[in-house]
Length: 397
Length: 144
Image (tube, rainbow over all chains, first blue to last red):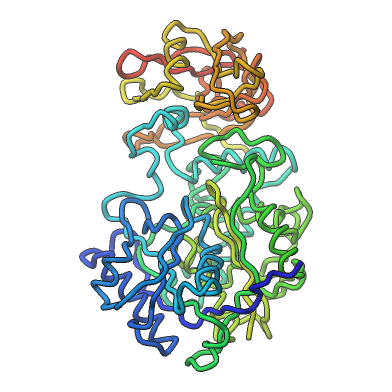
């Protein structure tokens, strides 16, 4: 059953600030960066910010942890006269790719005409990498925090270990993900880590939470990214070639649930990304299959979770992610499915998934730094994290 | 290419705090008596951890807190290299364990009394107790 809203809405503008090493965006404020990203996205689309009448956030409209975007404040700051839709996908970065579905819902329901999605991150008060260790223990995380699993990477190392145990996955696979993405960042303007990486250097990186070393952890950066969604019909009159929203899904199953904040997942969910139900829905609603994708922007907060998403989206069989990536399948040069052609969150910048949508737009406009030849379809994912996780398929107009 | 880490260390109890609510307090009160328990639905017998107000299987709010044998099986683990409190080098092993006598219930805990590089998925472990802030006892594990 093809999705009723397939290709009816489009991303028409995208904007981003420079990316900064964690804390280095100070003394800019987060609202300053959010404003820049939104104004640039409107300018890119060729619309006035005064035409924005909707906001479709993810991560509960939190900009990282502790900061929050507020629609009323943004209206006041940017001079937006009236808003007719304002909502957010719940939980965290898992909604990054599904927010275009929320924007589509707003537009196709007639609630709004030009919808902004924005994400920003500024880490000068609290590092995201140790966020759980720093928070006061709630009754719920009193069952987690005392173990010393202080941040998301420590939590996900336990999932990676289970995957290695069940399927024989080795660190060579994680190395290939990190090294291939670093190669993609080498010529990417503004990327944080651009120096090519050898396997020897990867294996010399200190272990933070064995089996994950420092290089398996994504960057800690500051910055903001925004994009504007409208109808495909309206997009025809705008400045850029539109990027069509071909499919979008968010959610997930109870067996994944709070995931690594819970650790109760049965096999095979434990050593997975929680994305299988999202992948299944995306392929069903779009009528497409993994082999139709020209490029995949896979949420890469930690290298091992890229591998598990490739399995859950069906680019390879469950448990085969290691040999699949080690075959060179995800390389920009010569791979069957180039992954994170911008360097991803491991090497370009980490703005809680928003950089992936930016890269998908550039690929499908044909202007990417590492342009995939004749790219028509891009898969974007958000999470793995506490539900909802999400994915979307974007299409060249 | 195995790394030699040495002995898995105990995390400093004086740095560890917990809080409780109505649903979780019975677990921690039993722990104070050095008894390991898990939340069991008094209606259908399904185990759930952490404790929550409703049974996810039958939606009952009735709970029971059976004494468990205190043994468990390592389901997965990590080897961490920096103190969560000071950032200084410290080898410790967070483990996810399947609790004997409570099918489906897991604890996220720590393993001590073993070299970190010798920890394996599937190994049998038994509960021990780490005194933490406010006179609570935190369940940890060591090899059987």
